[in-house]
Amino acid sequence: MDRMKKIKKLLVVSVFLCFMALGTAVVQAKPAVSGTTKMETFSDLSNPKSLKFYLSGQIFITGVSKDAKVYVTSCTSKQVDPDPSIVPSFLDGEERDAEDEEDDEEDAEQDEFYQQELANFKNVCTITIMTEEMSRKKLSLSDFTVKIKVKQGGKDYNLQTTCKAEGYKAFKKIKVNGKNITKKFSPYFRVYSMKLAGKKLKISYKMNKGYRKAGVVISRKGKPLSVKKAGKLKKGDLIHIEFLKKGWQKSDAFTILVK
Image (cartoon, rainbow, N blue to C red; front, side, top):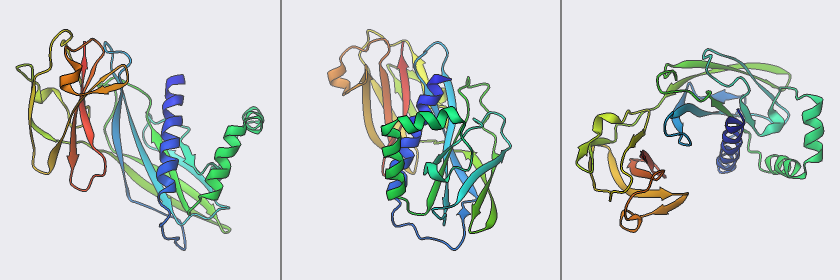
């Protein structure tokens, strides 16, 4: 559970940075949410023998006033963490217990973060929805509905969005060290492990229409290396086969875990 809390904290910070970039958002007369929220599958690579996955996505609510209170009232998926993160935090309508509030008052860093949220508030609220970490077989990719209540200007606004898992069919063919592993990758679960330690990487791949290559990077103990500089692969290396889709600002990747 501690790991999930760390993951959630990282997501909150990244969402806040994204939220700051939405400075041009138009303030609406009342809160509104998109009817569909995209959920992506992420993986925990710390245990190669038992890979775990989780779904995560961000719900954006526009036209939110500074004095509003936002609540997640229900979720039809039992796998979702019942305590979603809301940014900016001052919009979170859920009451914190006394111990948490006391800790926050003593934490100067937390207070500074709160002041940044307040100063950069652009009438947009972000709710991070996450599932618990589960095996590939147990994690459900079925659509689910999240209902949200916004209390604002003396009125209650009831909103909802349908969360859908997003998959990518980027590769027509992937061949690694003579083995065709195209079918090993799922559009949703983009991680696969192979016994490649002690070998040099030989890789070839073809893209499906609508996608383009973005390169191959080997991550060794957190350090990115080119295929040439990596030399012989080592146990624990991560081979990221990166790809781009039209309209994307940042690449995504299929990952091979070396064992």
